[in-house]
Structures are given as C-alpha cells and as structure tokens.
Image (cartoon, rainbow, N blue to C red; front, side, top):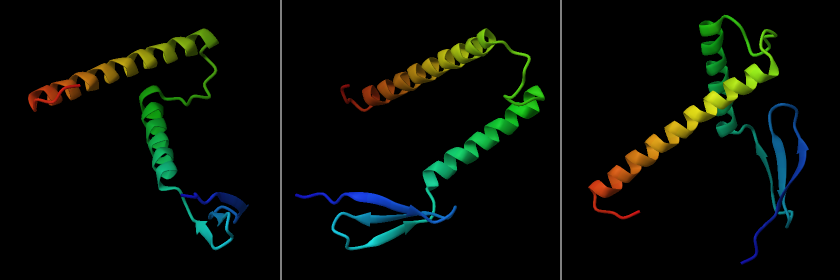
Length: 101
C-alpha cells in the first residue's frame, strides 16, 4: 500500500495553509488546528489565573534563575504525583473488572 505524501505549498496569511498530495490530485486548505487552538485557550486561561493569584506575569524580574528552577522542579514533582494517582486509579479500575495489566 503506497502512502501519499502531503507537502505544505504555501501559507494563506493567518487563515490557513495550502497542502498538496504527492500525486498532485488535490489541494486542501486547512483553516485552523482545533487542537492547537484549544491548547492556546488553556494557556490564556492559566495565565489569567496566575495574574489574578500572584498579581504579576511570567515577565516578572524578582526571581533568580535558581528560583525559576525551584518552581519548575516543584511543578514537575506535582506532575509525577498526578501520574501516579492516575496509574493507581487505572489499575484499580482494571482490577475491579478482572483485567490484568
């Protein structure tokens, strides 16, 4: 089975990209990427939460590089806890229904 290759052939301003398949049969225009837009909106909301909570943006100048690294480390530690909690819940659900890992 031969797969078609798709290439970007140009960008239409801010409203999309033009694509063509390797067999030149069709050109499609993709107006937006809904997944990317969802992530962008989530970042905007998260930024607003931070501004409301801390009264500043990430462009603040009062933290050293080590302070920023400390914040990052703490956030990543939290992320590993969330992962472990989800693993626990998934394992518990699988065991409840008699499925093995």
